Amino acid sequence: MPTYEEYCEEIKSIWDSAWLTNMGPIHNRLKAGLRDYLKVENVELFVNGHLALYVALKALNLTGEIITTPFTFASTTNAIVQAGCVPVFCDVKDDYTIDETKIERLITEKTSAILGVHVYGNICAVDAIQKIADKRGIKAIYDAAHAFGVEYKGRGITSYGDVSMLSFHATKVFHSIEGGALCFNDSTLAAEIGRWRNFGLDGEGLACFGTNAKMNEFQAAMGVCNLRHIDGEIASRREAFARYDERLSGVAGLRTLPPTDAIKQNYAYYPILVDPERFGATRDELCAKLGEAGIFARKYFYPLVSENKAFGDVDLTASTPKALAFSRNVACLPLFAGLERQTVDRICDAILK
Ligand SMILES: *Cc1c(COP(=O)(O)O)cnc(C)c1O
Image 1 (cartoon, helix red, strand yellow):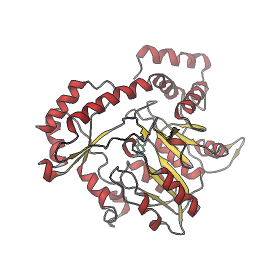
Image 2: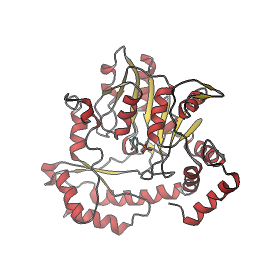
Image 3: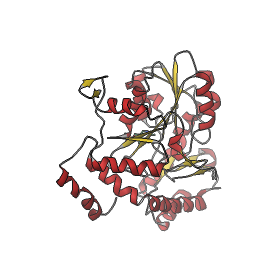
């Protein structure tokens, strides 16, 4: 969080303008700041990331099937279903993102889009996915909730594909209390996105059955404050991340994230994948032991979104064995800006013990 004083200073102007929500001046300042920081043509802000993703699917007029990943947060699949489409689950690769080599065989005449997730800030194979989308005449969309500020080939990661969604939830690398954004290159999409965000209103008319997903001025003010400090926050995360790496990479039975020079990372998460046999304990046993020591590692993502009871009695997990294994064996360790080296060491000592 910014200091109390910094936030109060930022919201003072709201008492002069009496403009609380509906694309106010602070909202517009945050939007401009994010456009620069994220290196993307267009940014539209939302009350949260989930509704941003829903609006993206509606604004692109997607129908039928959307190929996506089961190794994600519930939001991704829920948005697909809520938008009236059917999720088709593709397995993931060792970096936890959708396996682009398995996408094409899932495409049918009903497929309208591929929806990849940049899991833990690892990026999908955006170039290969774009090729598939172009060849088959379908859209490429990204859930970039984990990938704020990530860059690939000098470009902001949210400039890839037709539309990318960001989440500014309080638990993310950058936050506006709750909040979200859509990033896209095609400026002509902005009007349709705006209508879906605001009840379908189009001037005095109504153009579609839109939702209400506008970001208010208090959220935007939190975002403006946090954007001032984002580089320091990410640098602080990097230090904790590097210390985890020093202590944990190479430990038998634990797999940490492989180092990557190809992208500018944001150090959003520190996942460890437990091989119960070689490590000597399961992920669940490890999490329970850590919990006893007051250390809260998250089983993230667990369960798979394809295990949602609302799908009924069908087993949707058999066709995605990697994703299933990851959901049973992965844990994300505490990671945040300001996490001290000795705390990381205490966590690592507990894991090794
Ligand atoms: C946080 C998150 C979302 C949802 O974002 P909200 O802003 O909380 O609505 C969607 N997808 C993923 C992968 C997330 O981590």
